[in-house]
Image 1 (cartoon, rainbow, N blue to C red):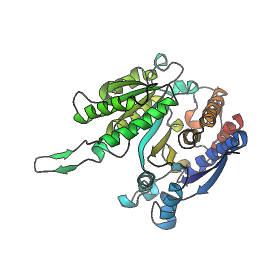
Image 2 (image 1 turned 45 degrees about the horizontal axis):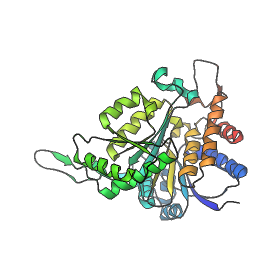
Image 3 (image 1 turned 90 degrees about the vertical axis):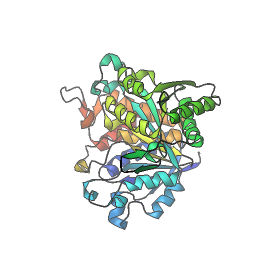
Image 4 (image 1 turned 90 degrees about the horizontal axis):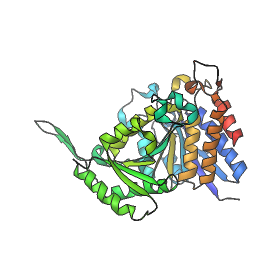
Length: 357
């Protein structure tokens, strides 16, 4: 029997509890099929923690998360808490968790399953049978965290990166590429920015540690065009905080199905934070219509990147693909103009994926 893995579970707000319950179904099936052993601890964060404790991230929650092998999060936030001051809003829990976990790299897969290709705004000849690439975005440095200020004539924000900050996020990306198609593209603006030229220098040095990885570079403006022109050329894209923020949002739209997109925040500690990129959608909470697949795919990322369970992760992803191939859809990813899909609810989708394992 495998070593027991500790998973902190934050159901969160809105549809969070609904979708997290389905991810747990799938993880339980992973235990049954592969002999894994998971110990779950449910902890509050976000709006639900504010309602109970008056703060978005209780100390006990953070302590349990730091001492776990991975953290699975549903979603936080909602209009109910919008009037609170910034430091008490539910989203502050995410910042506190990332800081406490030492998470400096955001991993966001951009996947178009061939069964959902019609949902993308891109032409069929561009998508082909679908595409699958991974953004690795530096999360705690760059222009968002550099020196800033104003004077009588204007304002300034500073893009600053240390060699150490660049090296560590590059290694996350290169390590991820070793589990994929072994191609890394560093996206920058090295024809203009000195910080980008440093990124290229560091990338060249780090690449020597990974002789099996093909390294290329691309200017950020060209990358923005290539994502809509030929997304299938990419495997792993590594880039700065701001460039990653913008490009990953662009990429999420060309996928055409936000309810399918997972993410992970990982870094210096052993524990990663795994969550879907969509919001808490309180208007559909408890109605059994939310799409749980992004959360299930986030759980697959957790298996791969924090628990080192590649086979199990691949099987979860294959299970999702098989369910889609069979024509099952939640309402948000169904083709409403045809009768070719079988519309099912949140719980049934979780059952279908678990059963297909």
